[in-house]
Length: 466
Image (tube, rainbow, N blue to C red; front, side):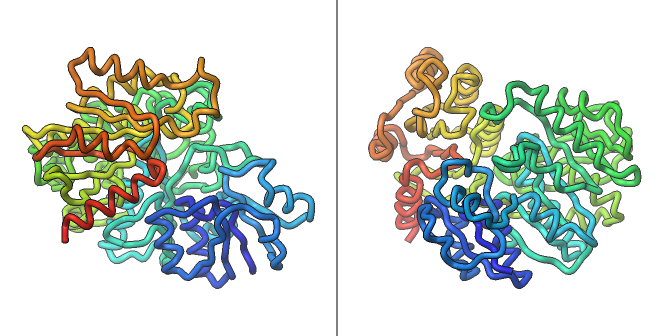
């Protein structure tokens, strides 16, 4: 089949395109622009990518158009698909059709930590000798690819609560029919499609109804919204937490530059001590969720200990690039206030005594609005110095609804923080040069490209390592 992907450079779309080519389909696509790591992965898979949307791209015969959820009516290629009655589908519907039949799915959900937890689940299975099919919303360093067809019975999927497509407004994860379901946490996000956390919780409640009775729900009940949605649960359910009455709990034994050492307990009985090469209690919670699923599968404790110790993480998740201006540069995907706060605290714990400098880009449909004005300010205050990039595409929302960078900077300065805002992307590197000092840890907090400065800064850092 000839498949054409609209929005192919997105992490999920690009990953699925690669899988479809592995299955023997002819695959190509288009996007506004492609950036690493997905640009590199698509090139390695020899998948042709057009830049920009042009109806003429559809002059070539195509059997099925896969439309990403970033596209909507008014896009010239979407209009051509509709006008010419070309068959089309969404990414989640294609996953449901092409990957799930004959397999069992493991679906990892939650506002935060999905990508790392999904990557760890895949690494555990492969360490145990399994060969799962997987799609991860990033590039796991142990694997080097974001997706791969396996020969085993398991399909491991990152389950996103964002809507499926302009023609299918239900959450993506409702297409994935999990046998094992992990719910790491639930918070308000995606303000462009959800008006409240209650709407988000409704999607999770519907997802829970799809898990068979002999399947398993693994729920992190440290999140109050998770506690709410899992009652009632019609499947087997394991509740995770830091203390009883959770079924599985954990005790952090040490945490620092070498990572985290922790013990897992079941009703106060030890199930083993584990080492994870990353700091932060949230990382322990991710690992605990994977442990619960793997234990239910019968994977031995010693295999889990080996997998946890050898897990290398995911690109753009607390990824160390190298040094610039004698400061360590760390790349992280965090953009929600909770994720930003947890990332900064983890870095503080890992690099004790060093100054933390945060470069933050307000980019998502939620963070460019003033819904999280206070929460973002408090999260960024975990750093010693903060540089705020321009609000990405501010015209999407009227000034009264828009994040006020000026108010944020003023509030941070009141807290005694060194805070700077830049008006244009080209001023970012000069602003950083004025702030960053030898010995600092500079962390980049964005799920985007900083107007192209992301690539420039990475190239500078890489050149300094030679």
